[in-house]
Image 1 (cartoon, one colour):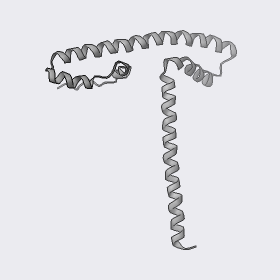
Image 2 (cartoon, rainbow, N blue to C red):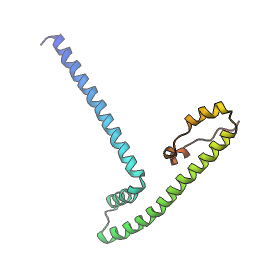
Image 3 (tube, one colour):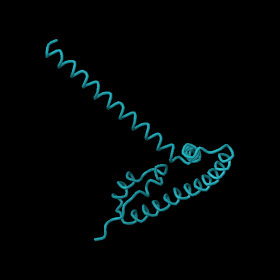
Image 4 (spheres, rainbow, N blue to C red):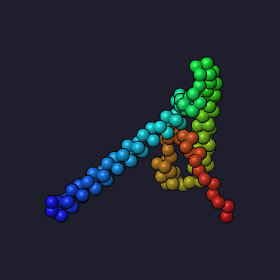
Length: 135
């Protein structure tokens, strides 16, 4: 076999490895994103928690019933807290936008209106902010 043919084969194999690796990374990232979405979706909290606890602790059928009841009650409370927090986050954002709006000129207000997220995008993720370092 000629060196040129070997080089082509090696290049083809290297290309296949790169494409396979990229595809695997993309697929893994999508899978992880889906898992994270399920984990943090309030509708799935009890199923996720029950699956995790049962997997780690190997609960008996009687324990499973009692643990599920405890999880369901806690999830109900967490859903209420989550919804309240999202609503309050929206209120804080609206107060902030109102305070900013009072400081703007009419031209600046027109531009600022394009920067304001729609209400459905005002989520608890807005809480992921860092405080400014002290001067």
